[in-house]
Length: 462
Image 1 (cartoon, rainbow, N blue to C red):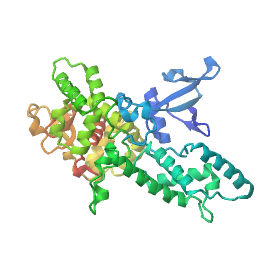
Image 2 (image 1 turned 120 degrees about the horizontal axis):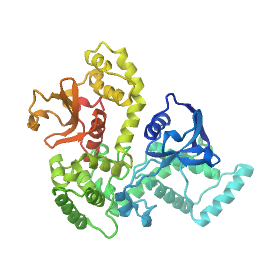
Image 3 (image 1 turned 90 degrees about the horizontal axis):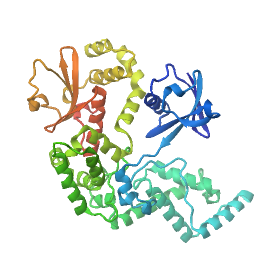
């Protein structure tokens, strides 16, 4: 099917999808994979019944037969916990002290400066357009401008990379060409170095003001300091939020105890559990990031976190993305290329057996890709994936079954038939999940939440 995809006003693509995905969810994954889109999206189509006005696509049957125009919108997702924390509240929406981390937008939106600064820049820009004369910024004005820019950066991240600072400096001279460095090749190098210094100064000020993430890194002053500093990972958004307004650690501890008691009940109120897990997210992240507790201690204090449903929700609280969607989008991106590599290496016994099971279904292709990785990479897969036969194994001896596994997937077989796949945590039990690829997705997302790594023998695998 021929599709006209509108990603932005100046980014419109023509795409041929053959065959067309059967569901809207599969179409979303296909488009996210093809265009490298992260996060949740909404797909709209031009409806002939409403004079080609845009409507949300909820059923693939609504699309015209031969060709269609689709618009892809990125959906900004916020969990209840992010909306409930002080660092995310409307009263501090643009506060640089919050511990939320996001990628800086490109191009970076330069904030409005003070009224007198804006007037001076407007006049200087007009002079620059006429005769190319650059503006000599007074020291006090430059300091105010750098403060404003640093605060705008901290709305997104407290540890910007050099490339991100470069992008901000470049955006500044694009918006205000009168600020270009005279004689410089690019015209923004001096702003770059001044801005990097101002960012470090602002970090110091926020550390003294007890900003959670920066206070955590205060004591590191050894030669290996850069390795010890705990920065948010690329995917992490809400890594160490402050407590919600009017709440403190004692309030969240009381709610945590109530949460533990609720999970112990025979008939658990899962909606209440979800709400309490959202409300106690700040306390939980503080414990996990600062104390780095053992998994056994985490399970004792946060037993609800060890249900598959909560693994997915916690991943979303931390990254603002769906665990399944992000995992499958990344997996599908490499799907066809990996299967071609597998076919080229079909002499490997394990791979040839898996390739014989291939069909045209996407779930089967995903399973073959994941099960074939240890054979292709020549890794010891026993530390991550273990297969047992129900006829010859005592299923009640969980410790013996999961021996040697830190975190991984347990496949229960009956002859040649797969009965179930379980996500396993060392000495912490097993969790049921649908399909091998789902188990791998949960296994990939779980260590991120606990600040733990994956088995060393499967590092290349991931």
